[in-house]
Image (tube, rainbow, N blue to C red; front, side, top):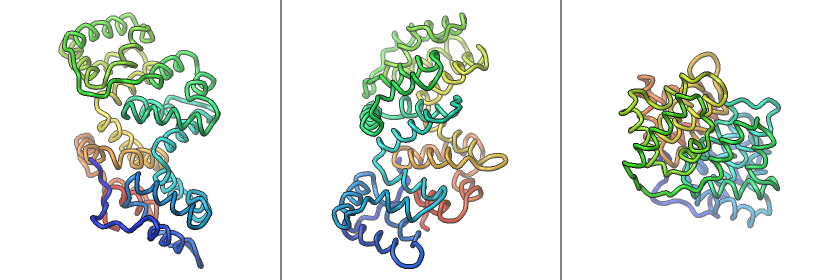
Length: 318
């Protein structure tokens, strides 16, 4: 469930565009007005505002936001304002362009492939090709080691069935196949990638459930027992995103705010990408994991306009 608050009567895109233009003019920028408008609009409404703003002022709204804002606040607002497929395409490209790519950097690609709808994944791939003149798969293959690339390409190429269709017999047999691969420590076998990369999410959750019933451990725990290499870490992440995306993103937020310092990029990504999807459920998973309130954790670890914007996406009235 979404956490953004959209009022019953929303100003027209023209009115919102005028409000934003006024926020950019004069001495300084009216950040509160920007938060009030963009933080309380759906993806469709934000697209209409961008199109209208361009028509009215012959200026790209994203360029205006980039010019007027700064820091983590600017990054969060821009990621929220652009279309979700374009946002995820840019996040994936940013991860693949890093000089030293670790598994943590690749988390965004796993999330796009395993915690999003099949339609969204296809839209991201299309946006990626349009933005960067090559396919997402090409950049994965050129940027990461072959074994990790093999897994990621299998995931992003997938077009899963998106309805709740489950075959218990398939779940039982594929749980056995996964267990055999884990026991032999051959996690990159083609049938493993076929199972994880093609089955619909409901079927995979049934398979993971069957695995635990048959072999007493969650599949991700047995994968971890295979070793602490990049392949094991990547596959645990895949299973986590598929099995319970809400718990996965609760852990992303928890890791970003707990301890010394704050990982603003991860915090921004989690809240911006899930505010319109399942943030209410993420709140519940966060409390189950950490026995504390997600909103309070965000307030304690952020400040200023950046904090106000994230809290607006979480449903707070600023």
